[in-house]
Image (cartoon, rainbow, N blue to C red; front, side, top):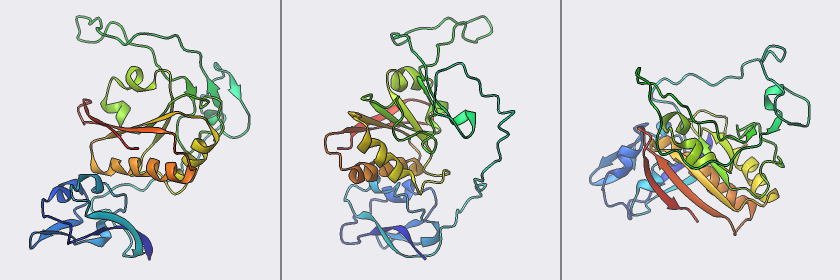
Length: 260
């Protein structure tokens, strides 16, 4: 079958081995001092290893290759029927449009501007005595569900957030969501076939000035950066500021770097 897969230029490869550790699927090996794609069926084509190669020896290409096989067991993501009568979606926020599940209706919430929290009260039991309010200003947030011309995009900065980042970092709300629009996506488990086209349409049809890609440090999350890059190219926008923020598994910010 024809699909996206990596290509390693042996002339450029210096055998540093960084790509081997970056590939969690174990598709890359070192042989005779050079990195090789030893197991094509274990390459998911997301290109998480691209950014780890200091020589630029790894590229993505579309060619005939074996179908991807997940080396470790990952349950298939399937559509779960939604009981629209019992989904518990309320109407506390302003609603735009109608139709479909109430849980995917566009909603805006007015937010009070707050300064970042510097300290928090802690009770005797070790639990916070005061919890910061959410900085999420709209709904929905999943990239599949947001309308291309949603009113919350406007001229706000856009955060493209990995699904896991809000779980790893307690700072996500005040550090990234405050005053910004957000879409959430997972390049590993989501059905990502339409993500590039959807995001490109959002960028082309809204005066968004800046994108922050907030991803985890795990290699598979690098696919989120590639989705944004491809969408930016497809949108034709050349005026956007784009930066990538990498969050470690313990919630610390590992790096912030410009993409364009």
